[in-house]
Amino acid sequence: MMMMMMIKTQPLWLILITYIGIFITLKRVISLLKWVFITFIRSSKNLKSYGSWAIITGATDGIGKAFAIQLAEKGLNLILVGRNSNKLQTVSNEIQLSSPGTKIKRVVFDFSGDISAGVAGVEEAVKGLDVGILINNVGITYPAARYFHEVEESVWMNIVRVNLEGTTKVTRAVLKGMVDRKRGAIVNIGSGAAIVVPSHPLYAIYAATKAYVDQLSRCLYVEYKHLGIDVQCQVPLYVATQMVSKAASIEKSSMFIPTADDYARAGVRRIGYEYRCTPYWAHSLQWCFASLLSDHILNAWRLAVVTRRRRDSISTHHLSSS
Image (cartoon, rainbow, N blue to C red; front, side, top):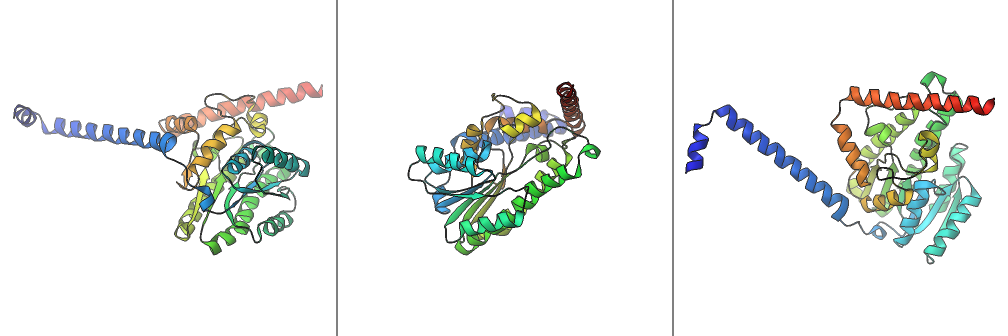
């Protein structure tokens, strides 16, 4: 009774502000609890329910290799796609040592070369197999930070061919069988450069191709969900891989820069759920912090970082040439 009397004596505007504050606080608490559940508690799906085989592009290094190892440990047979036959053989041997019962097929496919011939090889490899999971991991970026007008046409056309055309055509080749079986999961590896930050200056073509991958994933998620096919874009930030080491001068892992194995372990747990996700917990925290900042601040920060990176790469090149 005393509380009701106190509320009645308060101005209406103060009561409204109080209720709005309670609502906002409650909403944020619920969001936090949801994040904790999804990131640390929710169990992964039974990936073998999609099919007994998984195909991974860019499987000889970094995230692709790590995904292959994780999926083999889940009991899936593998189709490994990469441009270097010796590396494919080495990865196959390594996986069969740790997961002896795994059947492995290898497809030599240089995404920067003849896409049609490579896709034909993929189509031949998946023929007659119960391929349930596709990991579209292959991707490349600039050799160094460069303004758009400085990037040679052969370089940016190669990025478009690998990141955009290759991903699209491999997806189409594998998707046909999933439609017939009415089950499957497709994971496209995107990038924080296209989604987490409003721009990625001096890597414009790379960011644009990854934005394409994100939108393609989102549309296919809607198109094929009713057929039992789950399409997802995973959005990593920096991962300690060879490509990141060259592009961003990152030599080792840290709390916010996981190893490829740590990223893939988190990535496998998220397969089949949301159409877009950032599997590694520290990356999702970084995304949350970035969302609190204005586009102007984020753009200025990214431009400062990559401009310094460009200056350092040019200085290093001049020193090595002299």
